[in-house]
Image 1 (tube, helix red, strand yellow):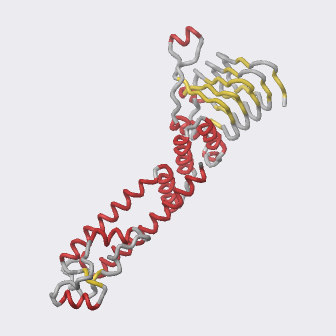
Image 2 (cartoon, helix red, strand yellow; image 1 turned 90 degrees about the vertical axis):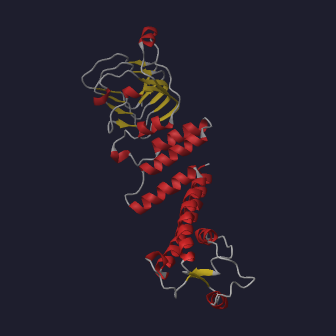
Image 3 (tube, one colour; image 1 turned 45 degrees about the vertical axis):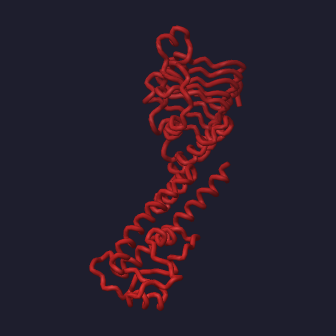
Length: 310
């Protein structure tokens, strides 16, 4: 590795080709503020100071390679980012990271950077996603930013980054993709599972309320069924049918409230519509059970990943 005992000041430089400094140990800063070049190739290098990439001219046609390079600090602005596919940061590491606003007249007069922007995870996610498609599945740029966030105690933002990374690296299989999306969202907000439980339970409640009114729900006990059909009322100890509790019990596989084993769709009921047929009601019950186990599995996976990422 060649060495440069000082800084590399390229601010305002204009060149038709790219500037290259691969495999260089630079003891100071690298400054390309206002540069107008075709590209900057700084790979497998070490910069002891800061790398300044601001106010870049014609940034939409520039390539920026920082593969395998380490810097103490990166100062950049969004307007200077290359377009998608022209940024390579696999193996790029940094200790400090500042995204600036574009410089105004006051900053230009004082030869200073634009105002630092408040750290926003979404900004850097868009920055990481500027890499070529074949590098989009490389975990290092994501985990480098994740380590940066964790080092500053930004745990919630770090989890948001992991969620975005999993979406980016999702499988082309739609079922697996849906699973990853669901578990990643729940990892960030486990209580979201309550919304799906509530929706499926309310759906079951509506279906089974109508079915009960039509007489399509009967006791699983033969004696109780005979008693009720005979219009003699309930046995004293036999629980009354509650469509909400019945749906909730099927939707929560580990919860038993004494409804599912006491009541069920009646196979002898003469249905007046599709939704009171034995087949339809049985399918609804099976779907509630299936969704219940699916929700429980996704939640367990999300919670496990959350503790693992901590």
